[in-house]
Amino acid sequence: MEKLLTDTEMERYRRQLMLQGFTLQHQQRLKESTALIAGIGGLGGTAAVYLAVAGIGKMVFAHSGNLTLSNMNRQILMRHEWIGRSRVVEAKRRIEEINPDVEVEIFDERTTGDNAGRLLDGVDIALSARPTFHERRALNAACVKKDIPMIEAAMNGMEGYLFNVIAGKTPCLNCLYPDDDPEWKELGFPVLGAVSGMLGCLMSIEAIKLLTGYGRPLLSRMLLFNTFDMDFRKLRIRRDEGCMVCGAGA
Image (cartoon, rainbow, N blue to C red; front, side, top):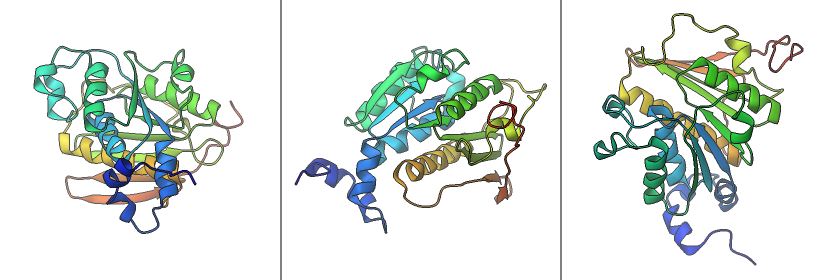
C-alpha cells in the first residue's frame, strides 16, 4: 500500500497530525492543494507563511512592484536587505527556504478583470488580500465564475473583517459591498502590523479548513473585530438574489 506521506513529511507535520480528528487524509488533501494569494503583503504574506508550514502543496503569488521601506512594519515574510527588489521573487525564495516541499509560482502583476481567470487556472482556493476595490472585485467575479472558494479579508487600523465566498452558497463580495468607498485610498489607511498578521493567520486557518474538510469554516457569516478593545463578533450575512456577480443580475 502506497504511503500517503514520506517519513520526512510525517516528522515535519507530526504535531499538526496530533490535532483531534486531523488525519493523514486531511494532510494529504492539503499536500495536493493549490492556493492563489492575491497580494503578498501584510495579510497575504503572513497567510503564505502558515500555509507553507502547514504543508500546502503549491501557492501562486500575484503582486506587482518592489519592496519599500514603508512595507516593513507589517510584511514579516520580507527582509530589510530586500528593499528595492521584486516582492514576489523574494517571497518565493523565502517560502522555499521555510518549506522546500512547497511549490511556488509567481506573477509580478496586479489582479484585474483581464488576468484573474488565468491566475486561477489550476487553483483550488483564492485568498483576497489586496488593498484596492477593483482588484478584490476582479478576483471575486472570477472565483464565482470558476466556482473556486475565496477567502475575503481586509483590515484598517485596529479593525478587520473576514468571510468566505462559496459560489451559489454564500454571499459574494459584491452582495455585501456593491459600491466602492469614494474616499478610500490604496495607501491612505493606517496599519498596525500585528493586526494584519493576525488576520493573515485567520485566512490561513480558513483556507486549511476549506481545503481539507477539517473543522467548521465560516459560511454565510462574517467575522468582525476591533482589537482596540478586543471586540470580536460573528454576523450572519445573506446573499443578494439580484447580485450582478453571483445572483439573478449576473
